[in-house]
Length: 145
Ligand code: RB5
Image 1 (cartoon, rainbow, N blue to C red):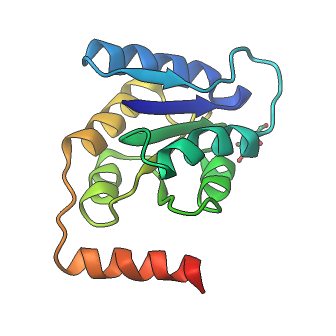
Image 2: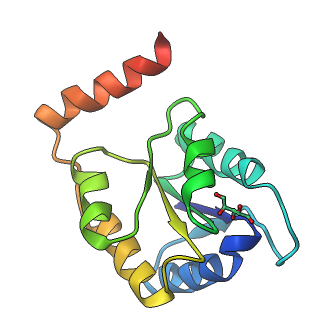
Image 3: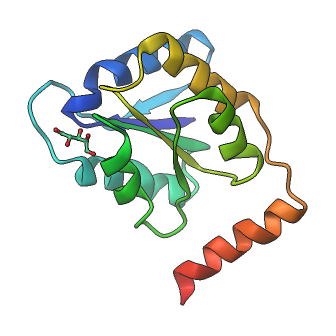
């Protein structure tokens, strides 16, 4: 199960991503926003990331205008490793090396065709563990101190 959300800047791309994920057979829970009216991206980041961090979803996808603000907000939530992805190579590495549990995209930066290759690259990659596990553990230690 996948959690997804966007602000107004990512509204259209979010809807495209939802369609794509459903076509691939995934169950998606949409945490809004549900119109192009202006909203604050930290509120959406919190709504998506808290249940992701609690293990209620396999991962989350967040979209704002650039993908930057919503990734900064997401990374303030304990247990979240959010990666802003603008290309499929980075999206695959975000899973393989960083075990990111949230990816963020920029609805005003990344077109829908590219966005779907990014989402697919992340989903289809696996965390490699090993030396990367130690580094991810060190990231998570930073939250504790
Ligand atoms: C909203 O105008 C815009 O600031 C937001 O979508 C995002 O790009 C922030 O990082």
